[in-house]
Length: 258
Image 1: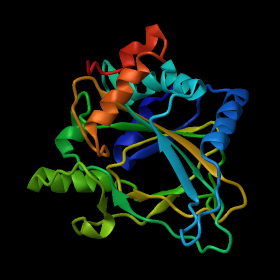
Image 2: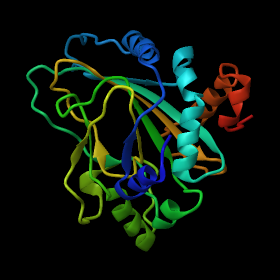
Image 3: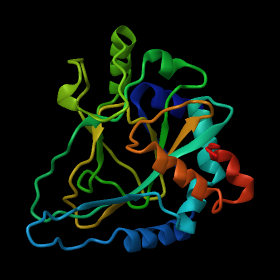
Image 4: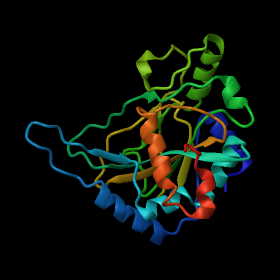
């Protein structure tokens, strides 16, 4: 579970990594599903090689069992200081080694909140749970982020009301005293609880093994947000499909969009 010191780190820094109860055997099964869902493929003539491969809107039972696992719901509720949360989105990603590449990374924010949003009870924000299926080292495509940047941006929003619900590149953000970017490192089986309102970005995998992660995102019940979703209709259709795939006793994590 997540404790008050970890929640404080989430609030101040924007990310905290915790241990999970998931067994190695269970995570190995999920890892093999990643291999099947997200294979490395040689590109067609003239097209660039895709070293970062991802998918959302999946129905594989082993992955859905993670989405509906009570541990994730409990962590999200405590982190958001909410009595109840709803599942918002999920995404699986494999970052393959890129031979001969020089380490580099992108930077952006997915959404801006105000300080009032961040400090409300419950918090008016999304909680992203990043479950690591492989070790994340400085060479193996670590997520790069600027600690505390979400609160600097939220302070600017509080003053000027410049909300966004779509990704914004770092160079398009207000000039603020951001910390230098640092890598987010983790062990397989750990989970990073974070906000994508902090400045962050994917990096290149210059290691010899792939990096695998599953994003599972929650929101407080009653909180409406359309960030990172090009089609609300597609998301709601996915919720309806999930109702026939999740256990009956776990349907409470789904928002009713009927």
